[in-house]
Length: 132
Image (tube, rainbow, N blue to C red):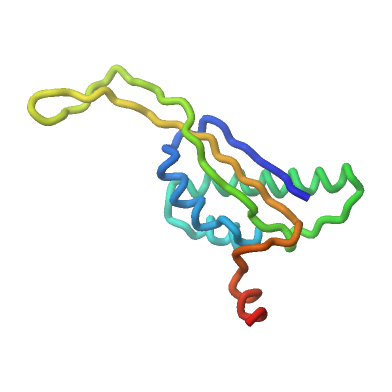
């Protein structure tokens, strides 16, 4: 079973959000949650909220389908950040040779997909050691 959570127009650039998303992709839900709690990046707080929403969506979807889902079995199947809208401000910033740049505020869309199905690729630390 898969569950998706989206946060649209979050005030952070997608490039900065992708750095944090790369840390949790393929991890178990509990491990990803701990990584986000202790990551010293501004995007980690927003991604943490989306991850929690994806977990809640998985529980609600399982309840509707009368299926038992264990939170410890969930893992982050996919997570990515897409470019959202860009707000162009009237302020100008200095540029070389007497020119000026317009100030732009970047927004992004954060998407996290969690799954309870068996995963093919990346395994967590204990599971990888047990497989060897």
